[in-house]
Image (tube, rainbow, N blue to C red):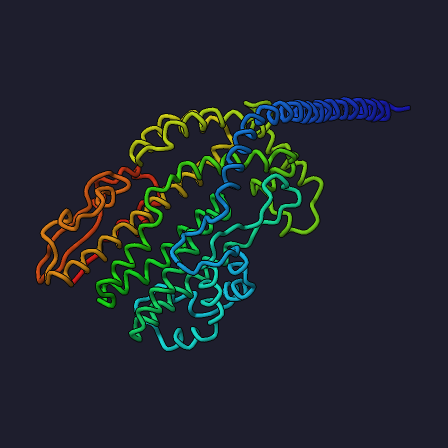
Length: 461
């Protein structure tokens, strides 16, 4: 064999040895990688067991809350009618026509907040007269109980309460229509039933979602009330009736609702695997993507685990770790004013947000809390506006200050800043009623501050 052949043979042998070394290196790295994944999964599963065991004390707290809730179901409605029926309001609120209207393309859904009703909106009103009838019947029921088994998450079917938000848009438009046609009694009846529906939701289904929908419903109905007050549609006793509607929920302890919602997560995760929890936390949406892909599932599983490296790769351990400071916070704020609540919350927030899973959940709870307070404050402002209109109707002019009205001092204080409501007598007999935004202690970086209708003043002629 010539010299060139020997060199070629030696190169082939060297190449094969190099390939073997490279392959061994790749397999070794792959083995370490797979081993690490297995180790993460094993540690994560063990930590999950410990985390779920740590959640048991909070489940006992939730059981206590659920027992108290069951005791309040009977006769839990607003009780503003003398001829109340001994029925469940949900039997009327779950009317299939509501879902049909909510999914429709009715112009009412787009134009419900406009002051003036177009001919197109007016023509749409008659198409959905059954909605009014169902809500009026529901409002006259003694109680509202929305069937949902918190303890059976596997078989629990979430009630379709979102459609009721859309239905209140119809009620708001209908009230404006009645007012425009001089039918004040009918308008008040619609608004009264709408506010009872709104109040029934969190009583019949104690979750933060129902509180969110209640807040949205109240805001929608308020637009019709404000429209009627600004147009001088209401008089004397009618204005008093409006005040009665709007005062029904003042002083509600929303902090308890938020804590109750946090405890309900115990039942949601109790029999949940990590992969199932990924769906619960909306980190994937397999329902919209067809058959799950194995590699994608594995990627999501281990990516999710790695988020919780500080708690043994376990979201359940992370969840459990956040409950202790949250419970301490709740005990301090459950009967406190908003400013005190916000001060205490800021002290605990850093500790709570050390838990990765609460970093995902907590901001949403904070927003719901703020939104409720803002809408409740708006209701107080509209209530005061109604009292001012009533005073002017009786005395011929607006009072020199709000204290003359003899209202509850709490109503005259801003929910968020605790400062007195701003009341100014303007030129030409007008008055301005509102909030001093500079005193509202919402952090400047909070994106919801600019969105709150709460900050818009009410101008009365």
